[in-house]
Image 1: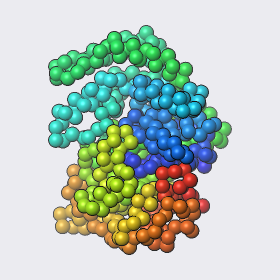
Image 2 (image 1 turned 30 degrees about the vertical axis):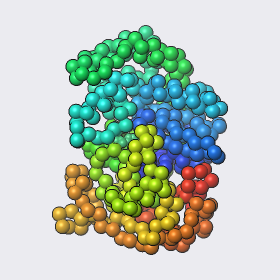
Image 3 (image 1 turned 180 degrees about the vertical axis):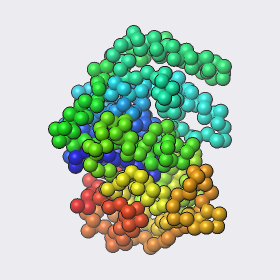
Image 4 (image 1 turned 45 degrees about the horizontal axis):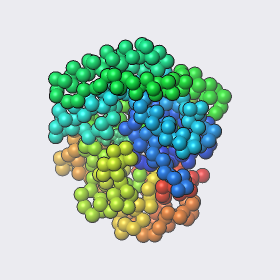
Length: 424
Ligand code: IMP
């Protein structure tokens, strides 16, 4: 297993949480390296369902250590709430979770600012999760953010929190939106700070120690490649790098120590929020995918937009992330489709192109060129090995692997742990 980075190859919601949960059986440490509680990683264990927003999915496996790296933006109130809920369900979180002293903190003023930006954008809004992610990363690069190390110095933290919140309150008052009640918010923060402080450490040291000792480390990516702030469908993206390279900058392990990259893709495509979606469907097939796949955002509950598999965009993702293990999820959602389409090229201004257009603004103008194959029309949900999949289904998967130029490794045919198998 060694040191592995796991990333989403589409627009998030690829089922990463579930694959991470299965991989974690062989893992000693799981590290989140970017994003924040905009993520919602769903894992079903037996009859129980867990949706994790900030805490790495590894927490569901006893004996697995977890770390929130410096690249993550952490809302302390939400993190505390998540810890309390997991502890109430019998998980020992405090002992197993470490929080990087360099992780940026997210406060309610970031969330209000997120909403204000969105309302100012009007029809051009991004469709954010309103979790304050963009404003928190903006504070980081503006060098005015507070980091988790502040939790170890409450006096200093209070001063810096109040200064920064007052600055935002001026903006809010002028814009005529709600302001932050400083005393009430600080009161809440102080309480949770006491609980979180013992978890704060320089995670670079613990991550590298484990790597040096030959332990298996899994870097858990959130969102997906096309939401990456550099490479995604800008400006309709999130505010962090969601691609594999970010595991090094946001998780604290050097590139020379990374052994594998697992790329997770759904057998079709979904997207939440605004922005181009080259294979989006507005017909009965899209509605069918949404219904069978229960396509509602795990964080906001918003319905997800659905479409066919986009091999052009996903090949780009596989290339950029250096995927050497491909995981295909939600295969079972396609079980009843008479025919299945895959986008293998785009049409732009009358020309057929096999690669992504140079300008991201053209992503919204391309038309997908599809190839169509007959569906397998048999349930796959009980399959526990490659051999048990219908022939046409195996052909579909092999075709995707060829198109993506990435070797298949993991298949998922349902939400439960036991509905996932490896090809080895
Ligand atoms: P933000 O990350 O809340 O700023 O939202 C920016 C864009 O990323 C919006 O289109 C969101 O819907 C999308 N997004 C953020 N996190 C996730 C996720 O975990 N899954 C899917 N989409 C996400």
